[in-house]
Length: 154
Image (cartoon, rainbow, N blue to C red; front, side, top):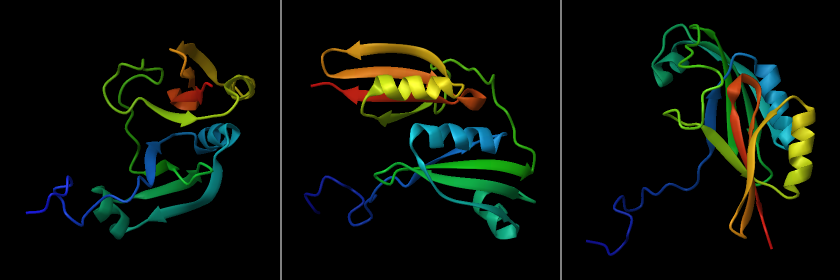
């Protein structure tokens, strides 16, 4: 038995590649993330039985856009054409709603980022200083998507 603290041995996770967000208005949400500073890696439409088999749905047709942060972390946006997407809960669900509620990005000059994204239609949920280590802001974008911004102080 190895002293390795990872019980999966050589089957280690290398990195997180992306987080999927299913959206209705792909263009609005894509623009929101582009305005935050992500870069569009690509956009395509996927369909067919192999896609359906992978994700456990039938008759799948979806348009997806892959966006990346400067260091390579990904946000995948999917607009399902078929089958119809299912909305679970209100668009403006509060942060304590069960499930994935927000994505957080480290930023420089949080004031400039907040000002810029608010000018492009986002809503400020709140801001605070966390001890003397971080300035934080939560914003709500299209379709109720919550994004956290964190600027390290000092």
